[in-house]
Amino acid sequence: MTTMTPATDPHAVPEDDTAALRTIDVRAGYDKRIIVDGVDIAVARGSYTAIIGPNACGKSTLLRAVARVLPVADGAILLDGTDIHAMPTKRLATRLGLLPQSSLAPDGIRVADLVARGRHPHQGMFDRWSTEDEAAVTAALEATGTSDLSGRLVEELSGGQRQRVWVAMALAQQTPVLLLDEPTTFLDISHQYGLLELFETLRSQLQRTIVVVLHDLNQAARYADHLIVMKDGEVVASGDPSEVLTAELVERVYDLPCVIQPDPETGTPLVIPRRVLRSGPAAG
Image 1 (cartoon, rainbow, N blue to C red):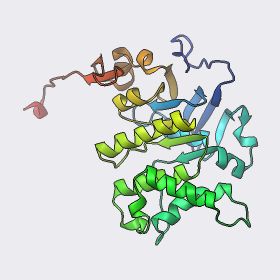
Image 2: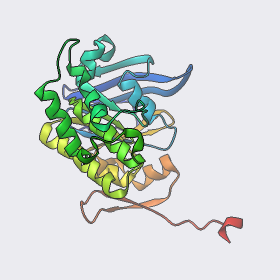
Image 3: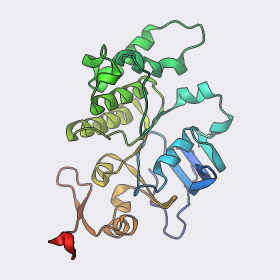
């Protein structure tokens, strides 16, 4: 677990050999517009890391760059000490999986067939479908509660059901490192917590490294053992949630006055927004 980034050096990265993922002065963006600017992070092997921050702060851009979906303008990204840009695509896909914010399934594809696509990195050109492939897909469907949907067309599913199916495809890929960009989007609160519990099981029982972008600060604090806080394309703090998530930081990053209290269920930081009465027509 990393310690909180010192306020005097927001880009400091611990020098150790426990990092599954490391970025060094990464700059990335779209159409020559830099969104992520000089970001250094270290994600410990076997950790549950949550990236938080306001909209448009660069969370998804960073995740896409780490997954090599988005090219970097500068800097390096290391996976177990190896630059990802020096790795063959298929090799990278067996080591690192990404669930993006939104995905489009081919028309007419059924759930089981979509989840099975997670096995492609593990198959050679002439390999046949194996018992290992079948077991991985079955386990992924069961873990996400989508087994009963396996014969359905993806296009017929609700938004929440589709999201769980995409998570199942990512799980079927069976990568040691799993990147998830807002995976609880479209899900009701029960399925939100169910997925976050599932990711904790993957981390604790299967030693997976989980990196997840979340908007809910209380969910991030409850499940993650490592927070990365971003604002305006930069990392402003990182470390243990109990050290990082303070009222001062929340107000500085989100412009939200709040109090922090221990969660009565877990003891983790609980963000409680202060009620601010505003004047004007909307106040009535």
